[in-house]
Amino acid sequence: MADEDNAEITINYETIYEILRREKGRDEIQKLEPEFFANLVEYLQNKISLLEDSKNKMDLFSSAEHAELRTQMENINRMIKELYERREKKVIMLALNKSRTGSDIIDSSNLLVEEKLFFDEIILSMDRYRKGILVKVTNGKFPDIASQCPPEQTNSSVDLPTEQNGTKLVRFLKPVPKFVGKELEVYGPFQEDDMANLPSEIANVLISKERVEEMQG
Image (cartoon, rainbow, N blue to C red; front, side, top):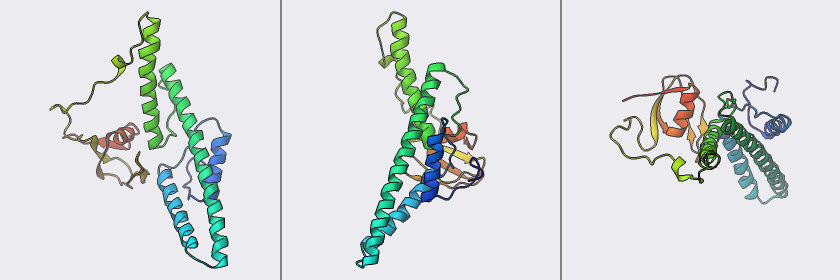
C-alpha cells in the first residue's frame, strides 16, 4: 500500500486489517475506494461459500479447514464492525462540527456515498433540533421542534419530470465504479455518458461530487 490514497485495493484478510490499522491510527477519516462496500460484500460472499462447502464435507481435513475458516470469518466480521464504528464516530463528529459552526470548509471528501448520506441526514437532524430548542430558548421562546420539520412532499404538477418515485435521471460525466446503496443494492459500474435512474439521495451526492448531471425533461 505504497500509495495509500490512490492505489486500487483488492479486498482480502490482510487489506481489511491494514485499512482498520490506518483508521485506528489517524484522527481524520481515511479515503477508501468508492466501491469498497461492493468489493467487501463479494469477498464475504466467497468466504461464506467456502465455509458452506467445507461444512458439507465429512473428512477430517475438511473439518479442520471448516474450523479455520469459521475462526477467520469471526475475525473478519470483528474487524469490519470495528472499522464501521470508528468511521461512524468520525462521520458523527464531522456532522457535529458542521452543524455547530455552519462552516463550509468541513472536509467530507473522504466519505463513501453511503457515509455521505448518513452525514447529510445527521446534519439535518442536528440543525432541526438546534433551531427548535437552542435558538428558541435563547430568544425566550418555548422549544418547538415541529416548526423546524420540512413540509411533506406532495404530488404537485411542478415536480420535475425526471424525478419520480424518489429517483432522478442522471448522465454520468466520468466513469464511476460499482457501489452499494442504503439497502445493500449494488449500482454500476457506469461509464462516461451512461444514463440511469438513481435514488434521489444517491443522485444528489454524485451531483455534488460532479460525477453526474441531472437530465431535465
